[in-house]
Image (tube, rainbow over all chains, first blue to last red; front, top):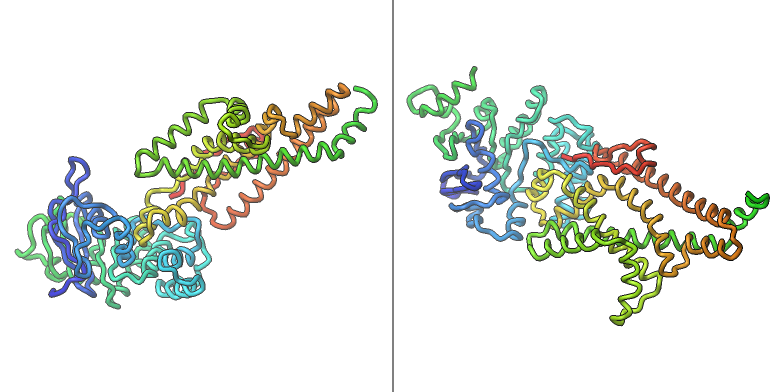
Length: 248
Length: 246
């Protein structure tokens, strides 16, 4: 990877005495879909929130589009976040707005897009996530899978260079997981650069260009999916144990 | 009860003097509520501020205005400010004192509403590139406002009644007018009944408006945020504890 879109070097993050990230390195090239897997509490979600500056880091560098953003001031951090979309485990759609308004809010208020244009683009995005007729629905009228797809559309509305997914299917009913993964895979195939923290090994196998295994605040192993999930000596023992546990 | 009481009550009810006084009561209440909401919002936001002296100032305000009787604040504003060269009309004094007092209570209501909007909502807004004030303006406050409508309704009804205190600084509001009318002919029953009917009429109108507003907002954005209060609870002035919004 000659010129990664985003790269992080030696990220350290602690909450008080608890060190959650202990020197994480990672790089995402344009058009890549990087999956991050690992046991709960290994620091995956914290890592994502550090990458788009929602959480300050204690040490390390984050290079996004060639510039170090790790120590950006608050006001500039907001500008950087416009270019990085994020999808949360609990969707976090704005409860007082309809699906279409959820999608159009940031383009209107942050980018200053005319309302009519933003609403029209929101409609296109709804179609893209296969919810063309849910524009007027409010979040509590939608299923979990539908809400998460609206949340993906909301992030896409800012036309981000990078999408971060934080366990996007962990809070979903099993029957709606598929529709969300489907949308994510379509986006990845269109070349949307993304970092996906997930427990869905099937998705990682199908859609990832590379998979990273995190354990105890460190990126332990990294490989393309076919080698990552291989059952041979190249797979470190910790990862083999983790993958073994998932099968039971 | 004298045989002509009903007639006299009706005469008071339809008199320009009582009507104007009721209007004054309504005006003082509305202005003070608006002032109180502005002061309350400012204080609630100040308590959230990263700048510590601002937080200290907000706490000092709450301490001062919740810690002294509102009647004391009224008399203080009316009698002490002129000594410092600030001469205000009785009406302005009334609105100023009641607004400042109301602000302290509103601040706590607003703070609870803001606190009831989950952290995840703010994080999602920040992740979209919003500045902190935009997060507050477009995501947190609209949801908080829906949550705090029932307690604000309480405050308004309380304010209508609190405004009777203003009679001590000679503002021609409902209670003062009723009292003056009665003391001229000693027909207290009739004058006070007329005033009471006006008070009940105004609170009733407001309760209906509040119910309509809640229903309209519920239809737009169903956000389980607005907890339904029974009629009895409302009559008893129960404060709705804000429903949690994710």
